[in-house]
Image (cartoon, rainbow, N blue to C red; front, side, top):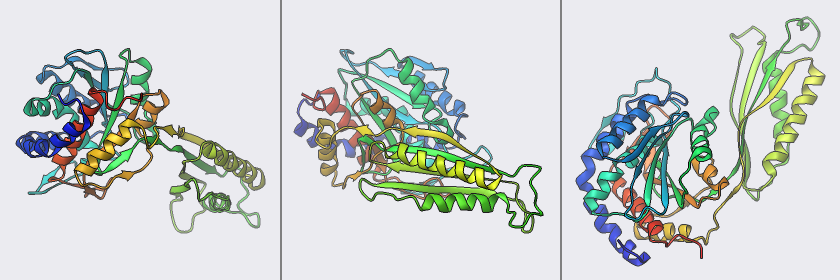
Length: 389
């Protein structure tokens, strides 16, 4: 095992070349995983697939916990420390969507293939990858397929795992199928919220100026858009969807807004949340409509510094691959690891297009560099090169 960063960097290109020998297994795993529907909260079939693969590879401590996470341990030579390698198992697609995957010489097409079937495939194929590369670690690897990550799942899987895990975790890697070059080492402050409007059954529609729920909700949106938003640190309020009404000429009795607040400034999300709640309450009191605000998910800011040894190692690894880093904060599993003081990053494995669309696709050739990147980071962590002094 390499014990200095330059030796690890020198091995990246030979590893990338050698990884082509595992192409068929890796892609087969990605496509089989992709063809198993796994909307948030219904990941059981995918997790069972992972557990079966873990069993075939002879891993230890194979389990599916109460939250639906699938875990296994690849023992290290010493086993004094543990490195967590995780990927979320759920997708945004319902079971009614056609999950058939299609493959060409250099692409795979299918819903969820990049987010996150490939990430899961990399984890489940990792034991065989390490065998092919003749790499063994001193540390144990905890391989985890995370349930209930997206949307209303609110990272329930990784949250449950970290709350109940008894194994000390030295560092963590969150694996996403796309995009290669992604380097997330901090968590962005975030709130996902819903505002629902309901016109009471006794509402006087004959009253002059009477409006439906959509018009009332639009007033709320206009008020939110008037809130001053700082340019630095970057802050956004994103209106994701508005739903309401049934026909052209019928006043809708209910409507719903889904939105997200993101900010890199500590405390800004909470400040904007309070302003939006004030708008909701004021509008409710002046419109005679029933208006409710609910928080679906929230994240806190935090993370590693740009100069942290793990971040430095990742930048050197990407530089060796001639891939420009795409530095972006995360609202995924990384945020929970950061909350618990576990040094961690999120990385991507390949290029892809049309994320979360039915024609989502990934490029096959860059995958091998993406896997070599993951291996190099694992070697760096295992060798103590990512530890703060």
